[in-house]
Image 1: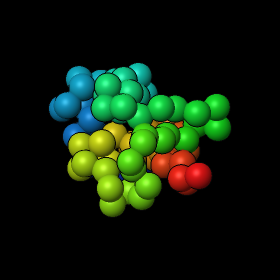
Image 2: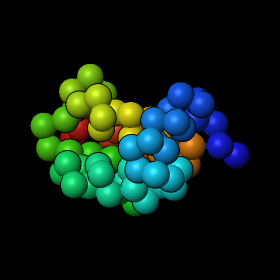
Image 3: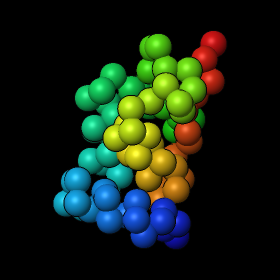
Image 4: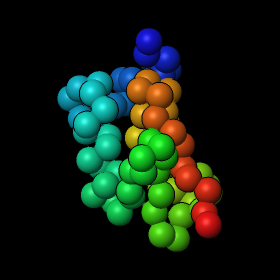
Length: 76
């Protein structure tokens, strides 16, 4: 069941024209993020959520809350 806030859902609708998972995922991938098999995201040089740009964070948060993706993977 969708659990993203109404505000975040409206932001994604405005940004991508839909509430699917594909558009935010493609956006993150275009920014250099990689989705792992355990549904977490990683990007070289990004070790905490605070390191992310706001638009990247919004997409990640939407995927986590609305589609049950994992969050940012811990750095090795």
